[in-house]
Image (cartoon, rainbow, N blue to C red; front, side):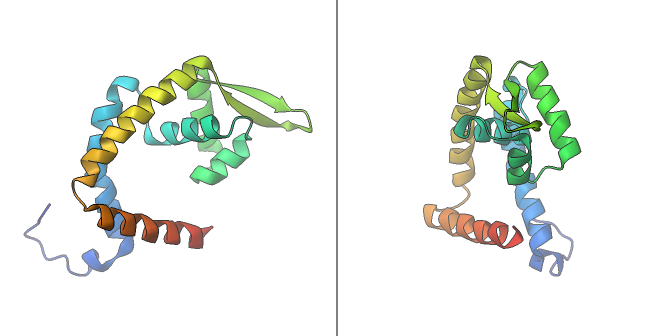
Length: 146
């Protein structure tokens, strides 16, 4: 989106540009996920649990960079919806190990199909090479932060 306002300084700031890029992609996500009643953070958590059954809540929270209080609320929402189950870690009863229920797996599969459509729409904004370069640079930033 072009603006008549002078924003040369802002458009040189990574934080500002990543926020604008997120704001550009987010409506596409909302359009595809509205029927599934699934937020981006919830999809990320479902994806991680699907790929890593028995991972701890702490591991998932650290991976998606969600604070423990926010993660607890997100887990509660997913559990109330019947998407996941928590089991105490036999080695450390203070830890919860996470597993998707059959319903959680079904929702994740539906959501993943919608994310594929979303990715195709978002990819129309960039060439395949540009997308790979952007992902490489974003991964580099993420890796440096951790």
